[in-house]
Length: 412
Image (cartoon, rainbow, N blue to C red; front, side):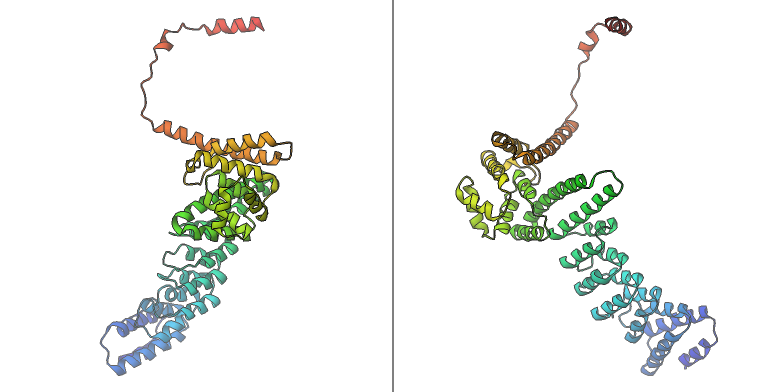
C-alpha cells in the first residue's frame, strides 16, 4: 500500500522531492524488514524510477545502491550504463558487477566512466588489460596509480606504448610497489625519447648530440635496472630484460661494454648468450679464457664490432686483476680504474682505427671521475669539522694593495 501511494505521489512531485523519496525507498528496500509481497512491490517501484526523466532521481538510486551487495542487480546494471556522472558511482564501487560487465562498460563508456572502473578497490587483470588497451589517458593514469589493480607486465607496456610521452603517466607507473625490469626499461626509453624530442624542438641541442646523450643515459639506466633485476628476479630476470633490449634494438656494443666496465658480469654474459645463441654456462667458460681463440669466436658469433675486441679483453683483464670490487654499487656504476686500464691498452695499439672507441672511453672516464668526486665531496661534507688555526694568516705582514697596484702599473 505504501509503495502504491509513493508511485502516485511521484507522478506530480518535483524532481528534488522525487530524488529524496527514491533514496528513502531504496534504504527501506535494503535495510527494513519487508515481507515478500512488499519487497517485490518496492523492487518494481525502484526499477520504474530508472525511467524518471530527472538525473537527480537516478543519481539518488546510484548513491544508495553503489556499495550494496543486496541491491537489485537489474537496477545496478542499468545504472552502470547510465550517463557518466551517474554510472561512475556504481562502476567504482558495486560488488555486483562482474568482469564481463566492467569490460563492456569500459568499451562503451567515456573517460569519466573508464576512470571510475580503474579506481575500484580491486581491478582484475582482465579488466586492467582492457583499460590498458582502450582506456583514455585519464583512465590509464588512474589504473597505473591504483595499488589494488592487478596490472600484468604486458598491460603496463601497452600503456607505455600509448601514453609513454606523458610525464604523469610515467610517474603513476613508477609509484607502483613493483615494476618488472622490462617495464622499467620501457619507461626509461619513453622518458629518453620525450626529453630528446623536447630539447631538439627548442634547438637547445642538435639531434645527433641529443641522441648520443639520451643513448648513454639509457644505457646507464639499463645497467642499474639489471642490477636490481639480479637482486629481485635472479638470472631469469636478467635474461628476460636482455632479450627485450635486443628486440627493441637497445642491446648495443656500448651498453655491453658499459656493463663490463661497471663490473656487471651478469649483464655482460647474458648479452653474449643472447647475441650468440649459446648456453650461459658455455659463455661463462669462454669468458674465463678471454685471451683464447674461443672467446674471439664467441665475440664474432655475437656480431659485436671487431674493433672493440681489445677493449673487452682489457676490461676483463682489469676485472681479473682488481676483482669484483673494481665496479661499484653492485655493478651499477662505472669503475674509473678499469676504464683507465682499458684506455692504456687501447692507446698502445691505436693507429687511428680506435678513435671512436677512445672518445667513448673518455666520456666514460669523465662520468666515473665525476661520480667519484661526488662521493669525496659527500664524505667531506659529513666529516666532523676540524679546528683550523688562523695563526699563520695573522702573522703574515699586511699587504699594501694600493702600493702593489701602482707597482704593477709601472711594470706594465
